[in-house]
Image 1 (cartoon, helix red, strand yellow):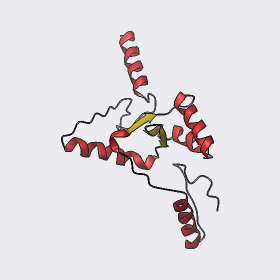
Image 2 (cartoon, rainbow, N blue to C red):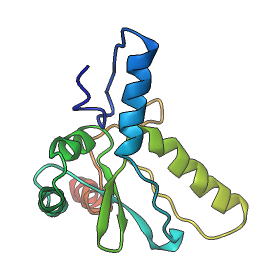
Image 3 (cartoon, helix red, strand yellow):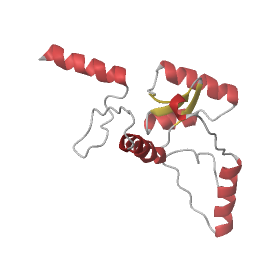
Image 4 (cartoon, one colour):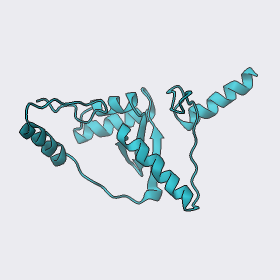
Length: 147
């Protein structure tokens, strides 16, 4: 079984038997780690193809010997990375609900939190046309100019 793209949001595997499945899980576990960080230092950052963030992340990944396809997969799927000071971590699809849930918990506790949403489709999901705050503000300016 090829495990070369287990990082991908669309990864799927077919296993002939339970032993192969468990070997795959063990391999993922050996190559994974949990890192605790102070939450006030966390920032979600949009990453787009050809952006400065993409260039920096590709260089950092190359220096660390990481698979460059991780960045391409992140841009295609979530378009988000988690920034902690000068470190970047790709955000997988499975993390989006958790991120939104944590923002809601903070809001329920009466603490200050600000979330922005824009470019939503009819189902309330992101339409994938406008990503970062800078794109959002630019889009607002364009709409003002055209009216």
